[in-house]
Image 1: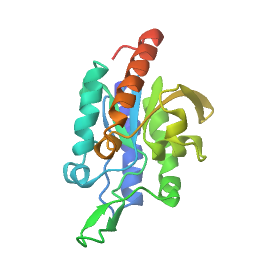
Image 2 (image 1 turned 120 degrees about the vertical axis):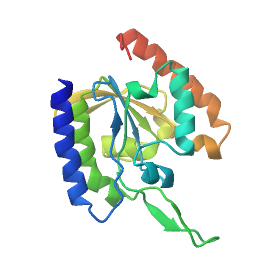
Image 3 (image 1 turned 30 degrees about the vertical axis):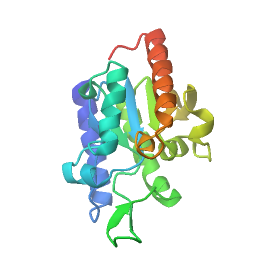
Image 4 (image 1 turned 90 degrees about the horizontal axis):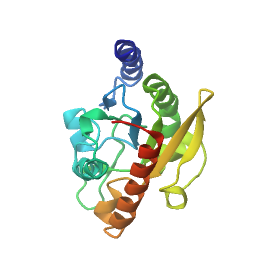
Length: 199
């Protein structure tokens, strides 16, 4: 099963790389047999440098939260909806800085994400922030309205459970979100336990 998934993922990843030869692409990474997928919005500078999702500052917070869930990072599969780093020029320094992906960028990558989800075929999708949430539900759902609740989405005619969390980077800018985040993580931990999900 793992071999088949790896083969399918390799084909998909080659398609992505061929479609965006002019971009620094950061592909999904982790355990292809994981019962959960963590889906972020897009890579940042550190992710591009190391070619892995969530290795920068947000990755440190993500690792903390995985510790709260008592899950080892290598046991889960982690990806982003947009596979390259969206940037803009800083008005202060003139250097390139991160920006949220545009709707057009989300649309370009959403089919790739759906294909990735269907290959991994997890029991729960954990979205991190607004961008992957909007991509999966194809509408203007907001993280502030649905975080910490188990939702359901249909991908390629199959129902998937979706648990939205704030993006780990949000805590860098809003310290008061940390308590909310921890509360949501404990809800998720309880749900995974009830479902008998072993990671």
